[in-house]
Image (cartoon, rainbow, N blue to C red; front, side, top):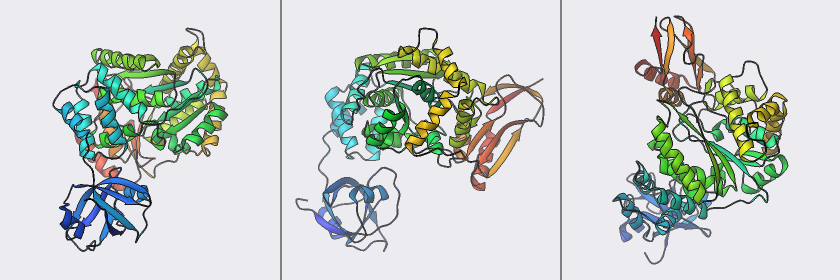
Length: 500
């Protein structure tokens, strides 16, 4: 199509997540004249804005022949209003798909190939199926170290890159796979109290019931732009910002949204995702937490060795000072699993509540101590003690509140209206706790979309329990979700109690 033709926009109210979709009638003159059918890629233009969209063909009277429907994100990106003229033309070929096919067939890509793919993803030229193919082609050790280095550099190059005019700039990240491991808000509060600069950007959940951004959003706004983020950091030394609201690694944000329903989180993509955002956010020093356990994301020492090696190689190649810390991943951290429930645990630790979960407190202090030592804010071997002093003094809680106030205010987490407590079926000892099944249970209850949904643990490994004693409580915002989770629970018990 050499010249675009116009169709009149009719809102349909259809949400397709991040994928741009256009809806056109099968008898539309553009469809007929240009051979456009379902899944054809088209370029849409409106008011000096343009996007690449996938066509869905309507075979009913939902649309007239001269009308076009747009998914909600497409409507937003084009700033389209009912009755506006939307120009439609076939999209130009995506040259980087040849690079994608090269990778799919098992060949190595160079820096140029990754830059081409990442640029096209960031510009919206890839459909979800193309992104899914790229993620799959990079999974399962199909990428070598140099490829991950090149992918990381390409992801940094395509977005914004912050500079804070100071050094060190600290960061901390957990590779995931451990429910309730919400140490980041505590670590940031301690580090900022100690005088470090820690502009923390976090992701939403990919395969878990809550990401740090999901948890923090319960307590304070996290969707900040770059200018607002900079204001908060300059004022308080730290922040809690959802990375998706920034343009630091835009291709990664799109890949994460596709990876979430696939529950795909390969080492190559994990390392490129994590480190690209650290580097783009201006971090110079970062501590990475790798929990290891039979039902964690990293299940063995050998797997941890491979991941640590990859992290260190990619960080070194990109000029990032990195410290990897291996931690216990045999069971959940804290009590809550789900955004609001984890937020309650964070608050209890920061407020030095005697009933706060001690495992979350100890893990956060250990990680905070490592951050302080890595950034030369504390003498070797003294980081934990300094972090504990800051926490016990109340300075960390005060700093946390000040950061929240700077981001728009602090809100106390709410409690879900529906709950059901599961009890021990016999006397015995808690022998195993399955992290994956607990995470799945919390997601079936509605987390992370339902902020107050999830699970609260009442027992830990090695605890002695008696028949009828509570072992965990399920929280839901709808009766149907509780029923759905209960059905899953019947055939997938997350705890094994060894009877005496």
